[in-house]
Amino acid sequence: MIKAILHGCSGRMGHIITEICEKDENIEIVAGVDAFGSAYAGYPVFRTLDECPEADVIIDFSNSTAIDGLLEYSVRKEIPAVVCTTGLSEEQLTALDKASEKTAILKSANMSVGINLLEALIAEAAPKLAAAGFDVEIVEKHHNQKVDAPSGTALALADAANAALGGEYEYVYDRTVRRMKRPVKEIGISAVRGGSIVGDHDVIFAGQDEVITFSHRAYSRAVFGKGAVEAAKFLAGKESGFYTMSDVLK
Image (cartoon, rainbow, N blue to C red; front, side, top):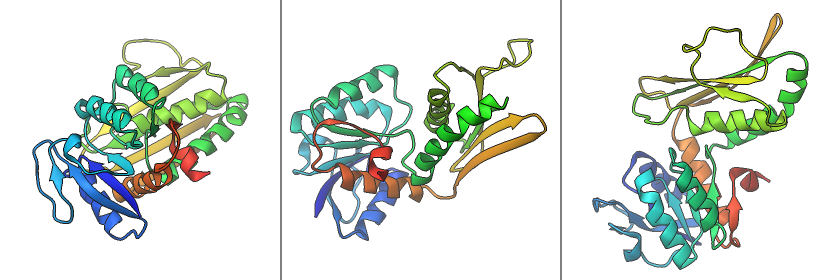
């Protein structure tokens, strides 16, 4: 039985992951961490990671302000960490890389199995469609409480396309400041915020007289929780290094 610490246990995703783990015979949450010490039935909840018992892996769904402390603890205790928090700064992303030299770190822009398979499809399609004159546009939609834009998933999908295209494309987020035709080698990324949209992503390949759209719709946050739990089971016991959901799906 894998023992996990749930970092950010009192949030919406924390509750979802708790419910998933309760039904999974291969993983058990032995402690939760919440800065305000909010209690949750089923396991003890602490204010800091240092108060937690020994565990095999940490699942993080907290916020960007808590990441530095998480990485310090993960490295010091040599406990693998699945980092699901979004909106990290460049400095924090660099810190993730450094931490992976000492312990196992898994970070993906989106924990959904479907999104990670979509990245592979985009990488395969992009060179063929670009050679045929198709433009690439990405539209992402999220709920009105999401603070970062564009989403990390939208950027990951753009990166998948761009890497397959030799890294020659520029990302454009706002066309209102310029008056010019669309350059060939650009990927437009648009963000929509409203209501309770869990997460919609469309990768649009627009050609002459035809359009191909790759779409993913998340109807429940449970898809992210399921992916995070599978990632935790995969990461427990792994050697130091930087892992992604692609490694989980191999």
